[in-house]
Each structure stands twice: as C-alpha cells, then as structure tokens.
Length: 348
Ligand SMILES: [Fe+2]
Ligand SMILES: [Fe+2]
Image 1 (tube, helix red, strand yellow):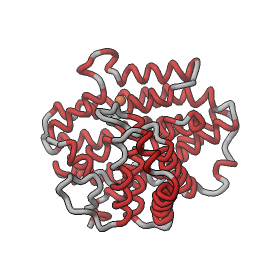
Image 2 (image 1 turned 45 degrees about the vertical axis):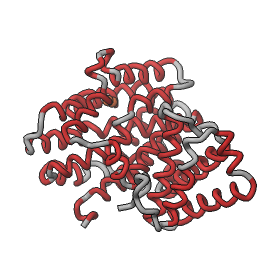
Image 3 (image 1 turned 135 degrees about the vertical axis):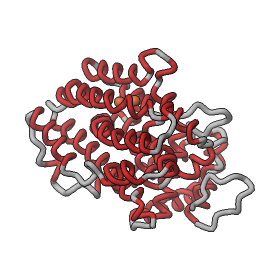
Image 4 (image 1 turned 60 degrees about the vertical axis):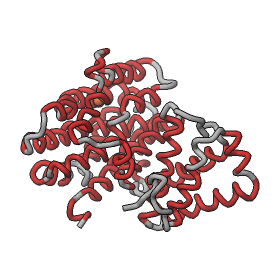
C-alpha cells in the first residue's frame, strides 16, 4: 500500500514520486505569496521537473507514478473544491502550473485510449448521434462489466462493499458540486436541466434527502473514518474523480463534461441494481442502501432529461458533437480501467 497522505508519525516514503508529492502538498496550507516566493527561480525549475518526471513515468506505464500523479492532482483539486480551514495556496501561480502539467498529462493519456479517427466519423443528425453514443456504450466492455454483474451481485462480502463505497466517493460524494461547476455559462434548456438535476441532488429542499447526505449514510454503516478513506483510494478511482472535476471546471471542456456526467447517470441504474442485490443478500442495514435504491429510478430520469434537454440541442454543433463524444469515451474507458482493477482476479 502506498502511503501519500500518511500521518506525521509514519516513515518517510522511499518512493521518489511520493516524496515529490509530499514535498509539494506540504505547501498547500500556505498563502499563495509564500509558495510563489519559495518556489521561484531554480527551485521552481527543480519542482516542475520532478512533476514532469512523474508524468513521463506514468505515461510509460509506471503504476506508482500514476498513483502519485492522480493523488497530487486530487490534492490540487481540493484547493479548488473545498472551503479551507487554514491558509490555502489556491491562488498560487506555481501550484497552477503544477496543476496544468498534471491535467495536460491526464488528458493526453485519456485521448490516447480513443481509437484514432473515431471522433471524425460521428453522425451529424442529433438523434442518430445520440443513438451512436448509446450504442458505443453498449458495445464497450464497461457495459454490464462483470465487476457489477458477477462480483458485486453474487460474491462481494461486506468488506468488499465497504471498499466499493470508498472508491465510489470520488464521484458520488460530490455530484452536486460537479453539476454546479459545469453549469456556469450555460443558458436555456441546458441550464434548466442542470438546475433541476441539481435540485434533485439537494433532495428538492429536504435536508434529509440531500443525495450526498444519503451517500454518507453508507459511511456510517461501515464506520469509515476520513483518514482511512484518504489512504484507500486507488490510482484509477482518483483518476475517475479527477476527470470529473477537470471536465466540470473548464468552460472550454463543457461539452466533454456533458458527455462524461451524462454517461455516468446513464450507467448508474443497472450498476446500482447489482449493489442493492448484494446489500440484500448480505442483510445489511436498510439505512445504508437508500442512496442506491433511489438512484435506480432517479438516474434513469436524469439520463433521459440530460439526453433530451442538454445533448440533443447541443448536438446541432459539430464541435459539441465531438466534445460530448470525447467526454463519453473518457468516461467509458476510465470506468472500465477502474472496474478491471477492482476485479478480485486483478487483485490476486
Ligand atoms: Fe444523485
Ligand atoms: Fe443523478
């Protein structure tokens, strides 16, 4: 088990990638001015070249480098998505440079997984385009992946489900914030659809029904402390969470975000049927499964609303068709990599 995010008392990591991560994240509780003054000139060059080294190794297939890359990007994103309790390096120029290097490398890795030419052959008529997106998902190995349809459904133990919800927290645990971020700058039917989806996330105004609140109930059932959660996230779950934030926070990636989040909603109901089945098979407390039961119905409605009110109108534009399909493919590929990794045979 890798140890970035370890407590003060833990030994210094011998992994050079994680040493770099620790050195950089140690600055994140300082003011931007302080960080930028300390990491200037040759110090800045040194740190940026270490980040480049992580990116190069990750691109060459080094798993520890991938973990360090995604862990560090997750830490950068925390500066932008969580309210700070102390000083924050959010506004630092050098932290922004580091974040951009990580984002660029992460984007290139996802684009490299897309079949060459695929995005040049998309149907131009919006309804045919939407059918193409769905058919591409149905033909992808992620669709009805054995992780859900065999392992979770039939074999997962209580501990497996506990681990499962930790890994899922990177997207489900902040879906409302992702919607809020991607909504900026939209108008008309798309903005209304995102707003109504967001209001569902808010439990339609009932605090007890807020989706992140319901999701956190599972953490109470399994008694998962925050520091265990931080330690346990794998490289591919961090990647899935990071991709969702990356696409939601840049206006230039709005189309990709539409594809990524739409496909997330569309695939959820069938997956959650398997989770509910496992939960009932194991006789776990009912309070912990409300979130998944609810989403079997609500996410099929969300997906339909999303396709009709966000994707179809946007699909009049060639650039948007390309962007949405790119986001869909990123979601299919990154979700498949994550599920492959979670299969018990992969862990053996
Ligand atoms: Fe939800
Ligand atoms: Fe949803």
